[in-house]
Image 1 (cartoon, one colour):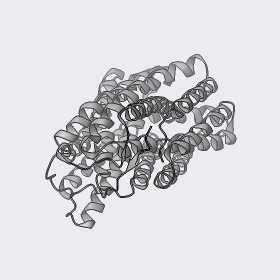
Image 2 (cartoon, helix red, strand yellow; image 1 turned 30 degrees about the horizontal axis):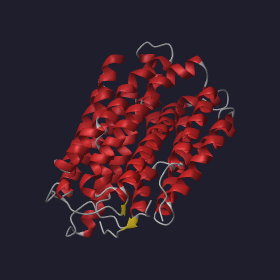
Image 3 (spheres, one colour; image 1 turned 135 degrees about the vertical axis):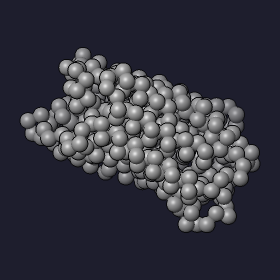
Image 4 (cartoon, one colour; image 1 turned 120 degrees about the vertical axis):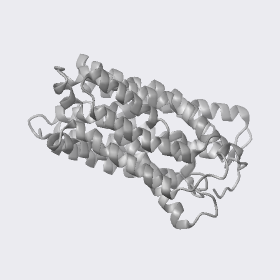
Length: 405
């Protein structure tokens, strides 16, 4: 195979003639949207124990499957969201994201039964599906150092996970679980109003642009890269969903008799997520400087022993190992976005990202449905050993990526 050729591309989320301060503010809102996206998807998982008790469920594991609709639509909605982002406009889709996810969260706060909550969460997942195929390509349109931009954006998304653990724990304890949905919902709507004011209209739809990809691959190598990218996203998504949706209950189990205050456990988990999120900034900067494949292989290889050790750890050892596990899981996230920005030109990035996300998130959303029944039937220890096996599959797939010069 001929080595890929690299083309320099100077690509900000706004037209080139936009004032620098406006571009920075819009970029800040796009990163904030990533935090909102991940935060809203994990409010239910963090508060599930309290909600289950109010709705008459004996165990949180029995209510957990009702949240799967959010993650199914989070994946399936990515395909039409990506298509509309390229053909209709990314600014319009981001406005739909902010207002839609805010209203869906308010509806979730008003529900009175498990099935009503399941419907509201499914609607929330549909609007959440907009961000990744639309917001990230919009952020990267004129980025000269895409790896660093992806790393900071990933940090913002994972800080949203940390905020979900921290704010939901405190709001559930002091204001009730409904406030944990309603207050962030109002914040999202406020961000939408600010985005509408700051972000100017697009002069043309992304599909009409002519910018080329940074790296040109032969068709066969491109097909292989896309297949590996999607398959690795599925297995990586399984690890992400199992951990982020189960960690709150895991800490509650492993710290029983040591720490049992929900707010303190939420703060501990938020600290884990905040520290682990820094891995994405480091990986993002490395992606601008080193070859993608060996870096990806190294991070995935570390997941296997760390997950196996976390399967048997208790107490404070569990907290340290959980931090290490989340570092390598979060650290593997930037690679798929980095591959898209390298191999796909801007006029169709939203559609390619949407197709990849539909397959990967749609399948990996099964983790949310399986989490409760698996833990109930076996244990968190068995779940973590299973995740180590999934990480081994990811390693085998990443080894098939085409090499770059």
